[in-house]
Image 1 (tube, helix red, strand yellow):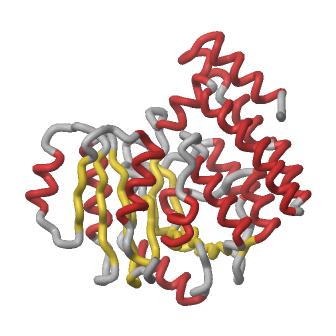
Image 2 (spheres, rainbow, N blue to C red):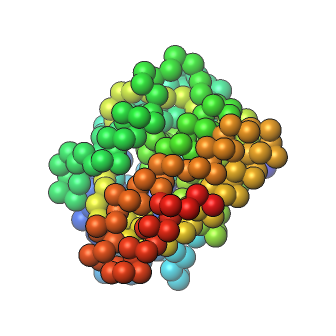
Length: 300
């Protein structure tokens, strides 16, 4: 493969709320510089969307509508196929970039040009766009994430164990090296935890992560999300249990015994299932409750 052009592909796999998608697009258009491009891949059939992009007529924006629905992971991989620049961001279609997002990422890469990934500072917002602090996000911030942003790069077994203990990355805000993501792609057999699976693949390849604390991205969390819907039915946790078990075996074979143990235990995922139990009872009844309890008490 020929070397990718320098710059940033901002990829927006879209399905769902039109207004939030338009806000996400506008937030990207507020970025400075001429080293980026936005690509929107529409996996739905909402009326008026192609016409909106046609009227937008911005040369920095590409818009594609899939001829048939590809699903979440399929659309992720379609976005990766379309990426041509050295770095990429797989932004959520309801998230918001702050005007300084690319400036923060550029500065992190200037300090650490060898970094495979960059995690910038993120705030969590709710459906109404206001700050939204959940138990899961407080736990990420207070327990799992590094207490102070490291001066150097994170990587290896230490980072793998940290993320498998509790995934403190915010996937839609992460900047990746395009060639790394293209080499592995997003696993088609995973519907929710595919981002963590990709990070594990990259860490086993030798990936390093730069962390920048400067706030520059708003990640939207609301009950209508794909992950929340699957969590209440138990589908998300069935997938997680399978992923953590097989990842433990892979890490063990790689010689990362401590990280393998953390993966097999996946304590934070099991505790999270307990916090979801009331919602599962309300939304999915007895089957949902059984799924939560099954995941919480059984590590493998």
